[in-house]
Length: 529
Image (cartoon, rainbow, N blue to C red; front, side, top):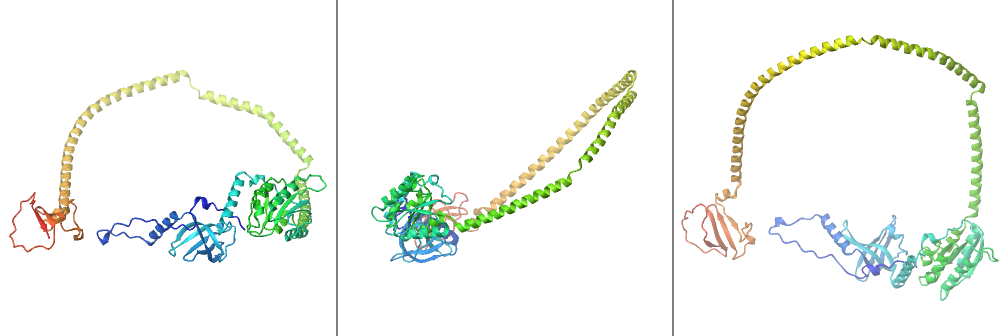
């Protein structure tokens, strides 16, 4: 029987809770059909989905599984039903692997998850995250609380667990001596790799079973290394399948603490593959079945022999290839190296050449330096010639400076006259530009005023129309919003009159219209029928 978490009892809604969409205020009825808001189908579906997911973010539902289907993708599809209703449900592949039980049609379960909608078919469904058998919730909650408490103490930490040896010499088994479990373990060990097995017989269920199992684990750990009874290199705690009550001995705190304190690597093989007990969390390794525990304890001898033979052959071949490659590289290196006598002859020739060039280098250098000195001396001039040239250049510059100064004075006088003329012409052009700009702006203002006046609603009133306003001065656009006795005002082109809405109009003698004054208008109050 799997161990399923029941933390939803503490922090979520209990199963059987009812709910629905939160009530939202209905939109105010518009005054005209043209103002009714329109929604797309996607907007309605999205609003419903957000409302359902926010309202039922965490629920627990109890019901019977119906129409169970496992998709090829690994997802689970089914329905939860009772006597009056059916709720579609889905469990995604990642959560399905951690359910701890295999759902079947007709199984009554308590599912924990959230509600959502599927807009493609206008349906709502439950996304299941955890599942437990109904009727065992209290026991599962007790086990879950115990698991959390022991985990908080660090008994299930990974760094506390001992690694499983590759090939143990002695294997200790804690199980019933009369059951099929020990026969399966011995048979599988004989097939894979025969090892010495020490059996500590215990009761695997019933009263006192937990104490015997814990004592067996502690007893194996108490054996001395070099005693008469050899100390096991690995322990297997095994039991066949059964109900949750049958496996309760392996959920007891005494057994879990003994397994966590074991210095010998421990493999737990309790129940079938879907069964989970607390000793599985404290063990160094969990096996789905007792037979699988024997397979995890030892390797296959034939496979080891074949692997060693293969590795030996690969090692011999690699050594031979390495020697052959080294031999070939040595031969190639020997062929590439020159003969020592040739190296000595080449070195002697280079030495003689360098010595000859060294003897000729110093005279050649002195000759080049002497030629450079003569060439530089020929380019030098006498200081008197340099002084005469500088005096002549100074006289020329002085003459050019006098002429330039006279030219600058003449140019300044001419520039003042031209500047006055340009200033006068610029003033006249500025006056003309300002006049043109003001005329253009005045024309634009006049055109805009005429356009604004043509858009005024008073132009419409001058054509014989009238505007009706309510007591707040807002225009009345429909007869449907006027009730009998409402105070209204009617605006004409030449004034405004106050009226009161009433019933059918009484007959009135014809009267000749009286001319009204423009401006304020008549303020008399009448009744509008």
